[in-house]
Image (cartoon, rainbow, N blue to C red; front, side, top):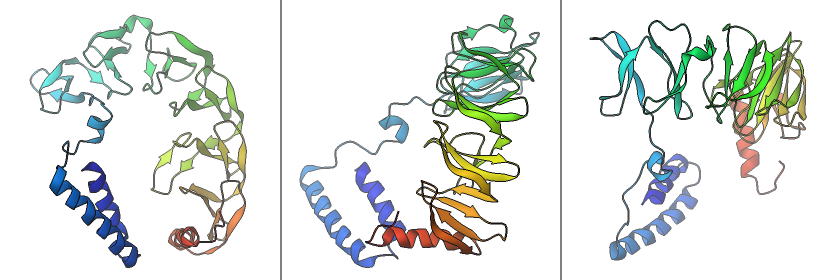
Length: 292
């Protein structure tokens, strides 16, 4: 039943592009429905969280009566009572909270149990990801990485940091940015002015995408590196955006083109807009003669 629901949504998205293919596919769905009439559907459609058996984390909520923060379940009831001056959302099963009278943050799990006491002295804290978080005792510099048991995983004090994504984090040492893995190994050398990963859907990421790619900047130019530090596209372009199968580029004349995943030109920068070059990529993907 879940598969049919997803499949029908996909058909709706493409109904105007290939009506012949859609008609053939609908015949196949009809056969499924006939089978269902005989055998039944099976389990009801589950949410993604149910399928993956993911328990939804409590959400931060402010209680007007106590003038304190706590966490509520989806039914609106407090599961962790309102007793905090400030809280952060749950990430990776844990959240940083700030109690009255304490200068530092403490870490709790989704039952409210304290995992890291405020006495540890963390003035600056970052959200956990992949079991790792950045913390600082002055809140601005000397960022180190810890696990949920407060074991120091990366003792090097960095001047600025970004959250871990798929085991890699962008960090700054002095003027230059690079990247380290979860045990502190440098995977991208400290030579860039920053990370500015732009995705086709409009999101910007301070670091690496889910597929392990990052847009880096150097002297006002953009390039692409992967999570191993390999330079896929040298930083020579005015703008770069990560497309699901390519890299969109913009030249100094604001014309759009595209590179493949190895940095080779597949569409010359001649299009006046992003839409034009993405339409051309779709046309190439639909061609029976592969070019990517």
